[in-house]
Length: 162
Image (cartoon, rainbow, N blue to C red; front, side):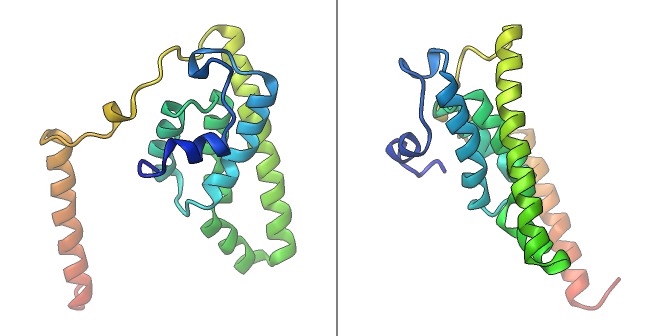
């Protein structure tokens, strides 16, 4: 997502006149809320992977409603839909996916306008450079520790241990 040019995101997501600082029109919020779950479907990732992508969308001037719809879209990611197909069949899986899609879009629009009415819509959007960083800090060492633990568990599994 970081490597996707801004022009592609601008083609997919309408933005408010005046950019991210302006209040988006209903058409912008509606389009963002409808497009975001479709984009999430093609990312093939679940909840944890959607959070950084949602932050990236927010920094790229998507509406709050679009970002909220995107966050809920892990329920219709391609991998989840495929599991539904295997368990329930195509007809019910498509029905469930369509129902969840409509609910996500409606929830995104609702959250957008509730936050706007309460004056809670964030004013500043972080720059992408602020979010994409590498540092040797506590997070690095936690990741390294759990990578070692995962490697040990994989090794135990492969050699037949319990």
